[in-house]
Length: 305
Ligand SMILES: C[C@](O)(CO)[C@H](O)COP(=O)(O)OP(=O)(O)OC[C@H]1O[C@@H](n2ccc(N)nc2=O)[C@H](O)[C@@H]1O
Ligand SMILES: Nc1ncnc2c1ncn2[C@@H]1O[C@H](COP(=O)(O)OP(=O)(O)OP(=O)(O)O)[C@@H](O)[C@H]1O
Image 1: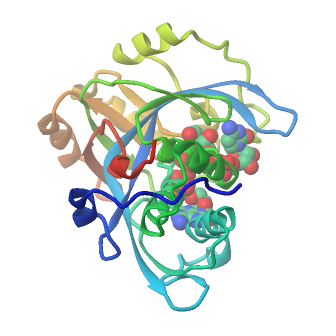
Image 2: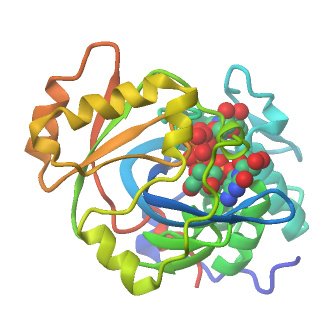
Image 3: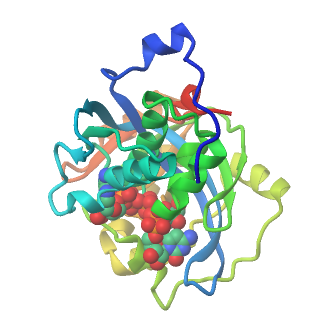
C-alpha cells in the first residue's frame, strides 16, 4: 500500500489541540452484546457485536527521533517491546507509507490487559491515528482500517471511531447512535487470554445471525447476550462471582454483561449517581470504574475521510 496524497495542513484550531506535545487518548470499548455466529476455515470466529467506546483511557505521547527507530520508552512487563501492539502499529504505518521516520512512544497504561476492554487494540489504533496525523501521511480511514486488521480483530473499530455494529471478525462496521448511558465496569482480578475462550470446546458457535433492525432495537431494550460469557465463567470463576455480585445489586435491573472475552463485566445505568452508589459498595478486592458511554472516539477529528 502507498498512500495517495500528503495531507493538507491541519486547520489552525485542530493544530493547536493535537501536536507532538499532546497526550493522545486510547479509550476502552465495551461489547454491549456479542454473538458468535460461526467459525471460518482459518479458525477465526464470525461475530455480531455492538461496540461502544467509554471514557476510560490509556494515554500515549510521541516524541520524534533523529534516527530511524521505533522505540517504546516504557515496555509493559511481560510484553516484548517488538511485539507490543503500539510498536507493531507504528512499524506497519511506516512500511505502508514508505517512510523511515523514528519515534519514541510513551504509553501510560490504565486499561487492564486481558480485560476485554480492548486496551492493546485501542493503543494500536491511537498510534495509527496520531502518527498518520503527526507525520502528515494523509492515509484515509479505509487505508488505516486495512492496516489495523492484521494487528487484531478489535483494532479496526477504534480507527473507525464511532459506536458500531460489527460483523465478520469485527471488521465489517456500521455506525450506530446509542442513547446516553453510564457504565460501572468491574475488573474481577484475573486476566483472560482471548484465544483460550475462542478455542474452548464448549463455546457455542451457532447463534443465528440477527437483522440490523432487531439488534438496534434489542440493545435499546437492554437485551442481547455475550456468547463468550458461559465459557469465561467456567474457566475463570472470578468472572461469575463479579457477574453475580452485580446481579445482586437492586439498581442494576438485569442490564449486566461481560465485555469481549472477559475478564471485565459491566452494568448499564441511566445516570452517573446510581452507578456511583453501586460502586461505593464494591468489595475492596475489586477494581471498578464508573464512566460515560461516548458517541465517538476522542480522536475522531483526526480521522481523515
Ligand atoms: C472478543 C473481542 O474482543 C470482541 O470485540 C475480539 O473478537 C477479540 O479481538 P482481539 O483481542 O483483537 O483478537 P485477536 O488478537 O485478533 O485474536 C486473538 C485470538 O482470538 C481468537 N479470535 C479472535 C477474534 C475472532 N473474531 N475470532 C477468534 O477466534 C483467535 O484464536 C485469535 O488467535
Ligand atoms: N500495548 C499493549 N497493551 C496491552 N496489551 C498488549 C499491548 N501490546 C501487546 N499486548 C498483548 O495483548 C494481550 C491482550 O491485551 P488487551 O489489553 O488488548 O486484552 P483485552 O482487553 O482482553 O482485549 P480484547 O478486548 O481485544 O480481547 C496482552 O496480554 C499482551 O500480551
